[in-house]
Image (cartoon, rainbow, N blue to C red; front, side, top):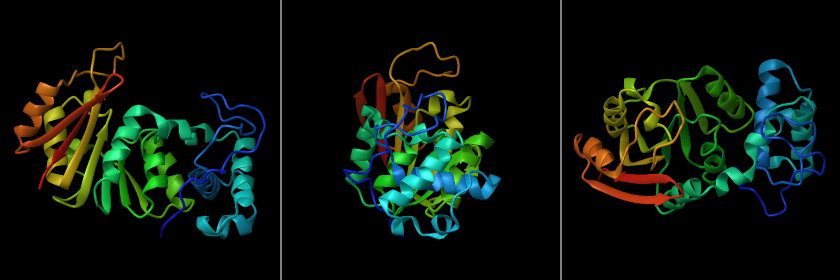
Length: 257
């Protein structure tokens, strides 16, 4: 089913600003991916029994909800201190995310594996812009998987979230059109195994982004330069590599066919 993208006038109701570290009691005038946020609230209600949402709003298909009904659901989530800030549209406006979304808009595909989806900084804008794509999200952290599964349960039926390590090849060979690994490889101890697994799973493209310079994040255990990424991917048979860069990030697209 195709879900609608964010409309120009789809804004949160006025109220207190949401701090990026808390859920907040009311939504601000900032813009949100409202349908994804409503799905999250509904899914959380299914899983935990909170917040209380009217049955008619729980049972309706997301595209059938009016803007006002969608906002009612989100307001219930705000009052329950759910993390609605994760759905701010500013995430989709980040230069590295825009660059990747721009590439994905230029190709035709129906299936995608997103590795290390985390808080959904890429995945939430992606799901809004590509509602017809069947998406599998793989993350090693159970609470990240639980968060994304609540979005799926709440009405985003094209999303499946699994707890899995890319190094163990969680999907069969050539089972998805595109694999995205955004701000992920620098965290993985066995980066060669991760690259090999991604190449085996993808049919057409692999999209990678990594920091382009050293930083003080102790979880970044590799600095993957253009030369190093080229070595890793050509080593497993990928010769069509295109590189770009934006604001401290290196972006690579591997074309497999």
